[in-house]
Picture 1 (cartoon, rainbow, N blue to C red):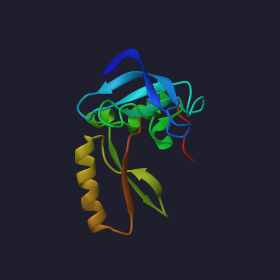
Picture 2 (picture 1 turned 90 degrees about the horizontal axis):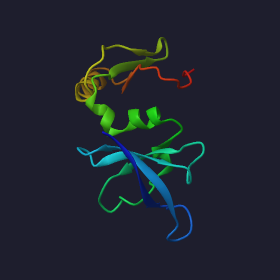
Picture 3 (picture 1 turned 90 degrees about the vertical axis):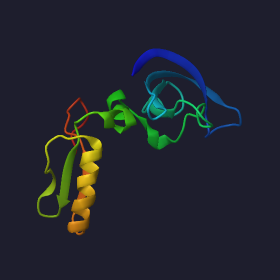
Length: 141
């Protein structure tokens, strides 16, 4: 999925009409028609790695600020590309125990199917999906 960095002008939707920034596509996930781009303008320098569309009407847009991250790995784990990996665990959050993983690593679709069942059987508890891969991000409090 990694590609030779390919420059593309993307529309900056938060500025003047027709304002564009040069971004480099670095990952293409053809199945979802999405990718990851690097851009030194726009939301940078704090968030230079972004989730972008590869084609369609939004192809040339930088997109929303919520799709841009400080580290490539943050963008990767939020992308559709990461859903192909069997790294996803179910987490349970309640006031007594906090947020703890309650499953082994599984595929994305399996985890969310199980979460739907857990939420039906136990609607008072929060269940969600995440991974436990460490890669240099600041530990959550």
